[in-house]
Length: 325
Ligand code: EAX
Image 1 (cartoon, rainbow, N blue to C red):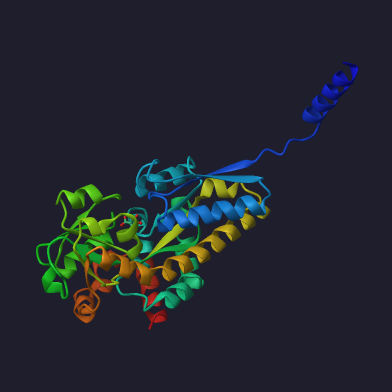
Image 2: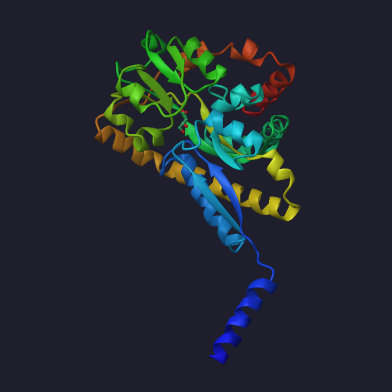
């Protein structure tokens, strides 16, 4: 009995006298479901940060849009009720026109060029340009090059787009692109399966993984490898939250997010060949060689349009177009 009391006293002493290291929890949001590009980044970030901090940091992932759509999550990040989001480039458009520079059509030749620019000084300028809106831009992971799908007909040239109702992201630039290409663009937040299924829209555009993970092959018979926009995710933190972290934690979190982004881009690209095969097996008719020059022609004057009338944004676009030459 006495021994038990001594033991209990010892346990209580340890509990009350040792400083307890409370784990700090990060709330991270993605609009997409498990297996999606955004979720691969989120899962890797959680794994890396929890391991490297020996559990001092934990990450809770809110996926499948439980926190709302990407615009709503960005608002929560501004207010610091959400710490981090892995958000597609498009929806940032309603917060700042600076992101239009990276959503510009036919900008990057290939993945290597996208990495070089986005990981370099121009990418950093875009990330820094988000700060006045309350976002701390950490780095870029990717959705990937976007391709068109639809339920009506094979599309090889812009003429084939006439009359097609194409869902686009909530982005003035994306809407302008699809109007210039000759389609009938309808901005809509993610997800969009039901709208495609019910025929509210005829088509949409997204990277290959989306057609697989969201089973668009069930409801979209035609795909065209337009690769019209390279779509990064911007991995952002709440600036309010970020500014209250000490430098050591900032470096740890930013480093884990960069490593997660690198891992995810590689993972996404390695899977693309198998995805094309799978989508064909599922019955999609894929136009591998559309008349890309004709599509490019239709959007050739975009740089001089209203979309880039802000002088700072226009200057950045000019620098970007020079860098990708
Ligand atoms: O990642 O809204 C979109 O089209 C995005 O690409 C979507 O979040 C899938």
